[in-house]
Image 1 (cartoon, rainbow, N blue to C red):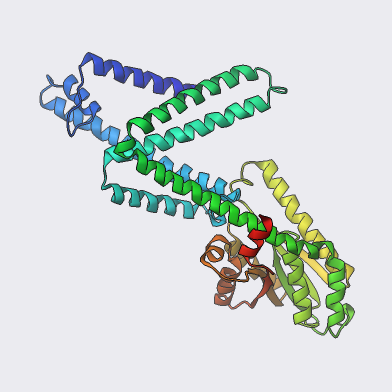
Image 2: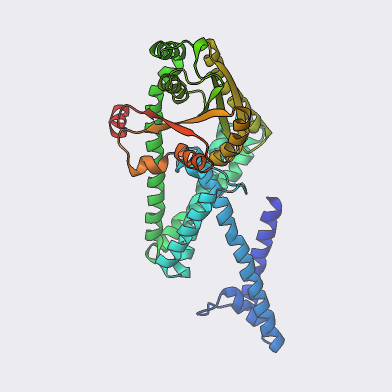
Length: 409
């Protein structure tokens, strides 16, 4: 950071001094650097023009490379927002290149839309860029001010660090307000509207996920009363666990965490298929996202969490007389990782059927279709293409999202 600060400051001061020394004036259709270089090489003849073109080409290449950071770091920010439920959760999944694929597509589409809407107006795009950049700077510096103030009792030298970030916050806020006021009629008001829409959208997404999380808590009753629910299920069928008719047949249940949905999937498999399976294999994939991929500790914590969840499922099934095993996986893509493991499972358990749970909302809307991961349907499609039996077990949520939202409020 020190090297970057020094090099950028040195370059900026050098350019400003060069503008003054060569009396660079604003020229229609030319950048200040183009005017500067032409003034520096005006006595160089033909070679001077070639030199200017080479410098401008180098500058364009540099800007092109710099522009790629938005297509790399932008999706990473979307991933963090998705993990924290401020954006659709599908943006939290990593692709094979460890960059969010959907995020890159979104950034590309948004960039294209802005170019078409603004008709390539550099003036408007610079205003849009400047305001949003300084909004980011203000929020970053404010976050650091809050951090150092909270760490004042444990961090040595906190006041000096607080002073640095406090100064940065004050300067950035002043520049932000100044740019908004001075450029309000030159695209500033449109920028505020666009940015405001994105903020409102993020708040709306977070509210939706909060409502659904509250809805899902209703399923926790199955976790608290798992043994009773299992006894209930066994009592409904016409067999005892030691008397199953499907010797050698295995139910492979895909789960994600030890929760009500997973337990309901197990219960549905027992009751709906009435003694068909004599063994239950639980498979869970620990998803590597931007949060869990930060370091070894996060990976180890994820692996332990998956192992603990699977151990609970296996123990639950064995307590009620069923043979049970578990398979633990880590990966970035649920569908691809499951398909790869499915072939190995089929070799080990030739007479197996795969099961996956799927949340069913009382009323299907665009929000529920887009904002929630329908991995079960994607898995079913891929499994069918490979000729592997796959059954989706529905988990019905009792109340509508609107009713639940009213209850929360």
